[in-house]
Image 1 (cartoon, helix red, strand yellow):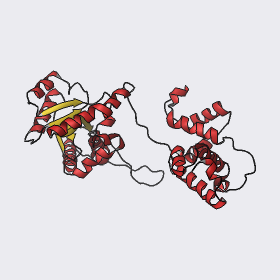
Image 2 (cartoon, rainbow, N blue to C red):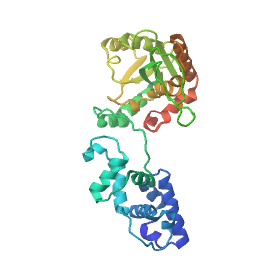
Image 3 (tube, rainbow, N blue to C red):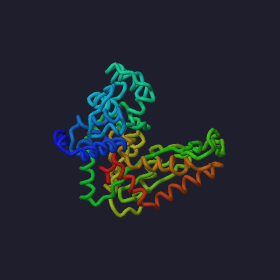
Image 4 (cartoon, rainbow, N blue to C red):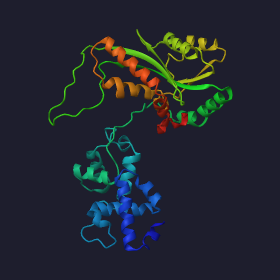
Length: 342
């Protein structure tokens, strides 16, 4: 339905269409997507949002509006939405990289000479379906063209080769967890922060793991030291032990994984295991990263640790429980950025 088609609707139908469209934006959908779904023009959806901001739900009635025109009309809202959603504040010469209400207020003053208080900016952003979120941080060294090449060419070729050879495709990674890493929240009386007691000693543990889209998971705990080339080779030996199929393992480009002794070891395996390397600085393309998120944020990071032995037991128990939960492991591959590997 084009914008001029919407004008031909009877008043009741047009009112319902306006309200439903604005509600969808309020619930967090993009105005552009809502316009496409409802078959209306982008100009119309932003004008309706401006009307709503001016007079609430009553302003969406199919009748003339009276009173002062809004400070920000539909075109201005459309511009503001695209800037906040698509641009980094640094691109607009701001000092910080995160959007704040104050910065958006400065933006409207700079662009439209319209002054908005911080709470008014907050309401405006909410009305546009823009929510305050914890951002993902990405290395500036990352080359997006290499990531796209991995998605479009490199990994599809690996997947096709694995199918040809009947190989299992694993994604692997190493991590370090500390006993003083705490995650999660708890309920408590207002103004009185709850206290959870645990050991003040700091204990650490290094691990290596690998997962497949079918829900298989292998892991190894490094009791002493960090994950070096020798430890990685030890993990590879475990991975191929009793394996009935070839193994294709994708890992990041850490020096441990690319060490000469690792390469030499892989050469001795006569094709039983092949190593592939993800694009640089691309942890978001490695499903095995969610193993560490599960360990740090969802399980051990929420537990009380009383000693080094207690810490080790809880890490091992959490990893074994995950290893036995194939459905959970397979679900890691359903995250939007990881579905390519499913």
